[in-house]
Image: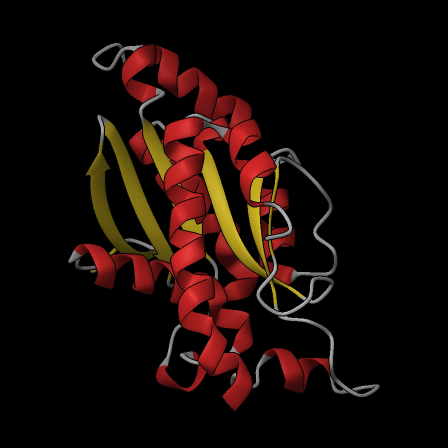
Length: 208
């Protein structure tokens, strides 16, 4: 599927390769609907909403998701919150990568991660889906595990058999107190990814 996308880029000469490298698709994973808004599984949406609030951006409903755009130092950030629900996130990611002709290396997917302590942030350039249905669908649609993902730790402090309830549960009081600082740090990571690149950002932010 992604091979077709790369051929599509070559067929449209209006934007140079240099232009394409200045465009980035930043995807926050989550589920649409008020009942999911403050759940741990929706941290991808929450990070993008925090970014938008800080920078005075507005999301607009478009095909397969809500979009907002932001420019900084000659770079274009296209923020996407898929409206497909978590399990079909890949459909929205592939559509907007293709429509905007954004190189795969300029994709960043923000997701929750049970294997990291609460608030820990980690950037990776590839990896398995780890049982995460949103990542699994993105991997299936792009036909690769080599795409950048920003993992936000939600910890695994749940009792046996309660994983779904925990992931779809809301942040507790202590987490809510700490979230604003962690969300600010997440904004810094995203800006660094776009402006400074993957390796520099991993060295600067991973584990912090």
